[in-house]
Image 1 (cartoon, rainbow, N blue to C red):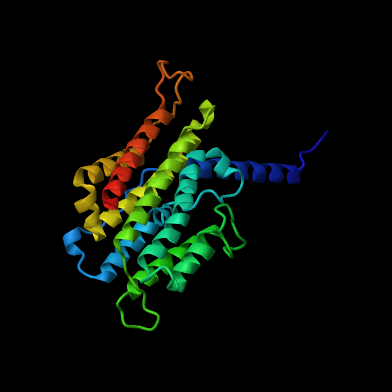
Image 2: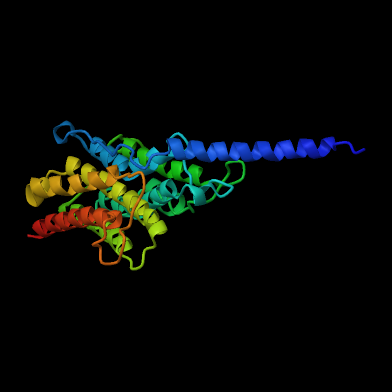
Length: 306
């Protein structure tokens, strides 16, 4: 007669419990994570009367998408453990697209809005945000929250907000806000280049059907940052509309909002290379919106060159 081994029973129950917790966590992440958060909504142009407010608008436009992900219900997903990023790849690629576009945005906007001339020294807070915080890997979990991805990105966001709050404050090392027409052009150029990159990413040859969602959600992340910055720039500088045209602005923002709101139950990449199959091609649909937005921004840039 044999007797059950109590240690084996306990060990089996522990393993089963851990598996159940893991499955439940993955389910919760998949259920509550969103790739369609609200975009940046700056104050109306007539409500922006001073440089500190303008600085705050541009700072928030730069970090809004990243901050929204960090403050979401389950936070930053790409650095989660136990293969969660491999399973829930839509939100992971969306967040990777956001940080990809935030890094050059922080660099370009710091150089264009926070100093009087290109030979002046940049504000140290913005230097640290760009070169120490946002460059940090998006997949580092850290050890007991030391040197983790979330902590680094949150510090970069705080540096941007600290700079904006100090503009015209009269305190030591107060921030500077100064934007010229050349600076506006460079910010628009950044927006155009990011969209061109996203478009090229979507136009890669031989995108496999089951990889198509990865490409789409990465491009969505990039586009969300561009949309926020374009909205912020229009709010703080009237020359964008005066010289670029309200129609171009509206068309670009409408297309970018279409990309932001895109979130089908299942991503389909079309049935064949020709594109005449019965199945829709979501990759081509998103690429078209991004292409139109990029062309409109390019038209604005051409108008500002005159």
